[in-house]
Image 1 (cartoon, rainbow, N blue to C red):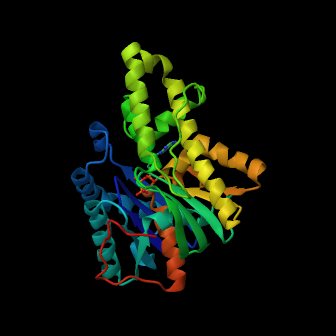
Image 2 (cartoon, rainbow, N blue to C red):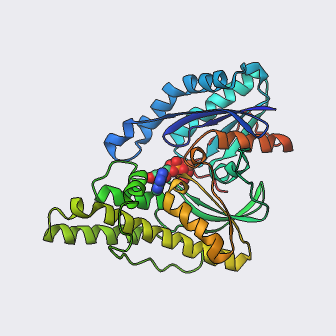
Length: 335
Ligand code: ATP
Ligand code: FE
């Protein structure tokens, strides 16, 4: 079974062809334009998607070495995301499905970040049901109890900023480029995680809050820079390491609680922040410390990609779960 997946929820235009669970191609056009603005500009994103979508899909088919008449279905991201961005992928997928007279499959982007674990990749085990999935990305921070492919429930989530935003906004305070997550990660490797202490937010239960942390970092930096204008340059690696250490501490605390409350020891992560080397290490340590079995996706399936959309398309195809031609994008689609 050949499935074409299309992802356009934010600022990456992506297309992938999979054959059953195996990736044949996984093409991404990342939009550089937003770097100048320090964040994604929705109108510019949808314009860039319009320019990228045809070449990206064409390349995905070419790399997979198949012609479009071989496709069994087209899967696309219905939401959540930016409406203008989602519309490009949605309309394009609809046209292909209509033109080729093949099924159209709508995919929830956040489910896809979780189900990316079911892509067939050598050396990567698939989590058994039930498992806990923590989705940590640019727009979301959730703990999801996954009982089956399409039977999952959010048991905890952020009340304000997402964890990716916490990284990006902290980076902005430090004068780093956008997105700052990868840069903080890189610098953290050379810094002392205990150099500076930031208090963790107190949020009951399995929910998260990151906006207080951002403010605490801002005030701390303002105060230090007042005393020493070179404070940031002189301590950048230590600041990055300390911020990352604090954020990871928050995530692991909640995972511990979720695991205790549900009795589930199989723990998976997904979303852009799961590329972070610190969280990857902390999860590994959790295997020894807390008896977890952990699942971390291959690097290229952490941030936005179309292979994760295609794999969900494949799983839905097997169930005969198709969308109609009048399906519409949904910016606030829930799990
Ligand atoms: P959502 O999936 O919630 O709609 P999104 O698609 O914009 O949001 P992703 O592409 O999944 O988000 O993730 C992007 C986020 O991941 C950014 O905030 C980025 O800083 C962060 N990120 C990427 N790599 C790393 C890393 N190594 N360490 C920390 N954060 C990272
Ligand atoms: Fe995403």
